[in-house]
Length: 343
Ligand code: AHG
Ligand code: MN
Ligand code: MN
Image 1 (cartoon, rainbow, N blue to C red):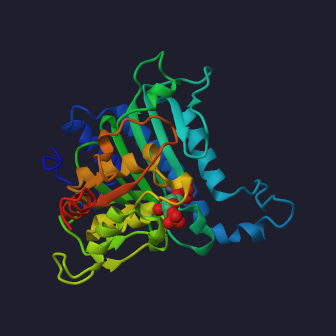
Image 2 (cartoon, protein in one colour):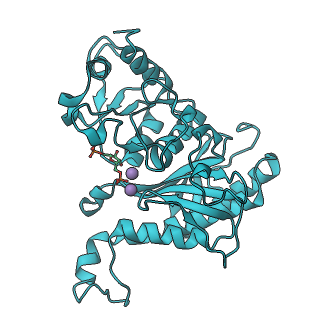
Image 3 (cartoon, rainbow, N blue to C red):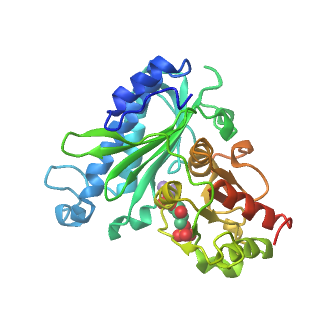
């Protein structure tokens, strides 16, 4: 389906979505409106991110900045912006955020729709003060039904049931990458006109990469199989005949985006030392599953080492998972080594 649509560089996101609606029976006006709402939220966050270093200066007098707004931590701000907009969109019946313990239902006095959304409002937030790229990740499902709306079961779904997923990357420019199951498309915010313009149509991740991304400082706590897999990329026994390049930002969105464009593998394994990380660090529903949907739509793969990420049915809203994601051949090689089928 992705190839049927003629994607013209520079097309605005609205034109692109309308074109998709014409071509794809699954794309609805409701989905277009939902994405438009997310985009407004991201523009507001992008604006705040761009002046992050000024917060302390503007907020010197008792936490209130010169515009009279309360100064808030950026991840709290991002969370509130999305919750506020999403609840008023009329397109959702419930939402879940990394920052909130339970499901948030759309209040009864507000119109409700048939979608649910799970999001990580600010990913990589420890990087904010150093001007390092951060992002927002979202995952959209159809609600199981009207009565299930705010139930936890509505959210404990397989990633393969996602209607759409995407992320905003607040980097040297602000980028939106999304999939609705018709390929992966990237848009760059042109700040002079305030529009997201198509810059990366039909993104395909290179089948095999040259980059491996992992927080190497935890290598002491990896099990033997994980160590063997990562050593493969650092050895000269791989397809390059020399070690892969190591790149690690520490923001999943930024690390994933780079590898999506250049090829490679991102890994966040389980940690046998720290009981809190024995199932990995990344959250299945708001981080791993949406990224896995994008990776697969772009020709890549994503696994927890034993199972395809999109096949895992969540048992908990904030469930964590090990994640190996990126170029298909690299992910398959890492999996084979971890399963003792290759070394
Ligand atoms: P968040 O800021 O949403 O809590 O996510 C941080 C995550 C992810 O973005 C990143 O890849 C990972 O934490 C980095 O963890 P380490 O610092 O342990 O490498
Ligand atoms: Mn995150
Ligand atoms: Mn976060």
